[in-house]
Image (cartoon, rainbow, N blue to C red; front, top):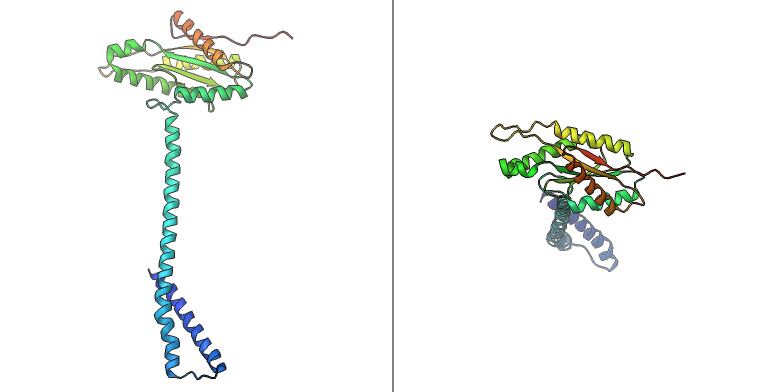
Length: 253
């Protein structure tokens, strides 16, 4: 309000000065005389008209500026909320990993651009037994422990998603077959090393089985997924807590 009064006062002073200037220059040219009443009118009229008119105009301007600022603030909040909502929609609600749709979308695009890379399909072993014996809350805690262990192994840029109840998928960009086997074995060992207990203090061993297949340009991602899934069940048939990986077939020169 103070700023409005100051601006309106300045506008009024300028109006009075303009009125006096016109009276002193124009009236004598027309043969008139600027007397006491004329002086009073040249000051009083701008004072009564210019101040309220300019104050109202500046008040409206301030309201519009405040409205624009508020709209800008709300737009920023809406943009942030939309981005957060879009990101949340891509994530699994419990583990925070990519959900099935987001993982396969991102992994298939990355695979098409990647010079190497591999897909791993990971399944928590004996998970139904954990749920049946200790209850679903303990099963959920076990999944979170497995997720944390895998995150500790994965590199920056690796994709990890939860694609089923106790099933995960990992895309390793740019890896050779040897590097893929090393990472897969580290994932298996990290989960096996987790010290997990039920609320009653019972130690619950955790393990994962992993099936993997090479990916990259020229390889249909759905076929890669099918191959990795087939190898996952091969690892489970061999006794679980194992890695089964099919490397690239060397081409003749």
